[in-house]
Length: 64
Image (cartoon, rainbow, N blue to C red):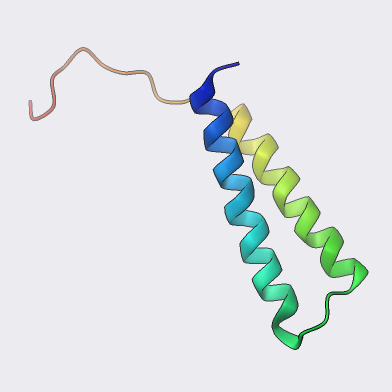
């Protein structure tokens, strides 16, 4: 496992989970359905982001 792929998916999961959680607690109540939505957002972001490979570095220097 590459560290970059794991870090990328971890950050995506945190971002998706926090966005879903902030939306869910606007009424100061967290229901079971909202909890499931948060969990699915995190798991979906982890799976999709981990599955997409990072772009390969090119041999062309920057600025050319």
